[in-house]
Length: 128
Image 1 (cartoon, helix red, strand yellow):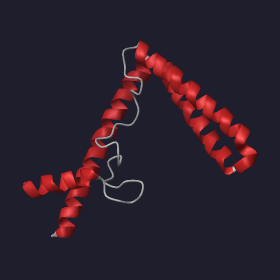
Image 2 (spheres, rainbow, N blue to C red):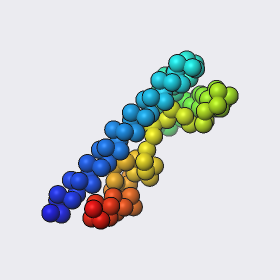
Image 3 (cartoon, one colour):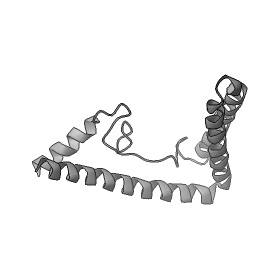
């Protein structure tokens, strides 16, 4: 019965992720249609984050590249936020939506412990 309850809680998380991804994609499509530049900036952001990851692997040798990519990421984020707010959106519109920002709808925190929302979902199921 305990395993069954756990499975039901995990199914709730799965449903949250599915619904939130749908919402996120819908908002992104709308933004990209109105502001094509935001799509380009998101692509640049992905490239810059990849560049930062690469620079981090280089250790001390990559410190100049790390700084360059961090500055590039900040500039892209600032420009994207400016475009979004000018168009009446929140500065982080189009970012992945989560029901719980702490665990990103997984039920588990980075350190491997259960998120507080897990207990909430469990209580909700037990009340039914």
